[in-house]
Amino acid sequence: MYQRKIPIDYSCGLNIAMEVVGSKWKFCLLDEIAKGAKRPRDLVQAINGITRRVLQKDLRELEMHGLVGKTVYAEVPLRVEYHLTTAGESLLPLIAAIDQWGLEFGPQLRNILERKAMPVL
Amino acid sequence: MYQRKIPIDYSCGLNIAMEVVGSKWKFCLLDEIAKGAKRPRDLVQAINGITRRVLQKDLRELEMHGLVGKTVYAEVPLRVEYHLTTAGESLLPLIAAIDQWGLEFGPQLRNILERKAMPVL
DNA sequence: TCCGGTAGGGAAAAATTTATCACTATGGGT
DNA sequence: ACCCATAGTGATAAATTTTTCCCTACCGGA
Image (tube, rainbow over all chains, first blue to last red; front, side):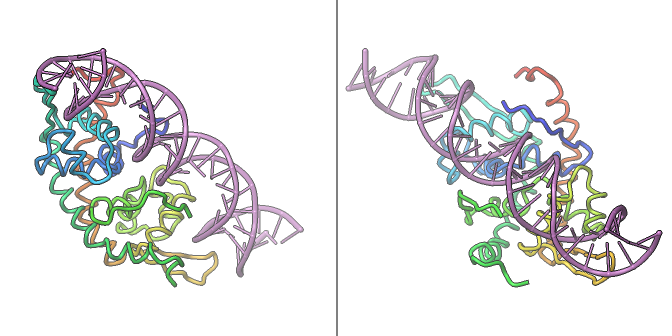
């Protein structure tokens, strides 16, 4: 795993939260798990654009950080299911709020980014 | 400015939000501006670890995205003040919630990261 | 034996973000 | 002319994250 060179600032809650959950896919991941996609295979299909590799990595980090738990069933083919822990569930309201904010803001962002020239200020 | 090679997924509110606000400092930045640090100089002093360069870059992006506004006073030395727009203010409750979550989660994260060996699963 | 589906990981490239350093510009004071 | 403080930018290095490609392992069926 990658060894951090710039230390985390534990005095800032925002930095802590970003460290745990501030990556491209983790919010979506937690969201989809909450919505019922428990198996890695389901998550890959549910989340548009994610790859198996990143999924595994993020799931592993979320698990280590204690936001999701994992159950392995001794079946064939192998079945693994992830679920939110209490800490993970405590993020759901935040995730929902951020998601909604993003959807509302989307059109404005698109407008700004898709004009070649910078907006006249 | 950096030219994105992997496009944004506008169908996912979470991705949109991350694009606008998911960087190391932007949450802190908006938070500090809301708390009254209006000038760049104040922000550098208020935010532990940020550099002038990144501050300028993030302020510029936030401004382009319409989350903060900017006022230039023709004084000497030059005085510039930033303020939250309506869109920026709409993020404050979220930021506060995330900050609080991070502070509550901090000890657990620290525990996990500061033991050399991986926790026994 | 080879192939299927499942879950997981190593290594390196590519993408992206952040840090570092060195500038520009303004106008006042010494 | 030089130094101060302010705000801002360009170029590049360094750090970090994400992608891509390929391999392991398990076990059942053809």
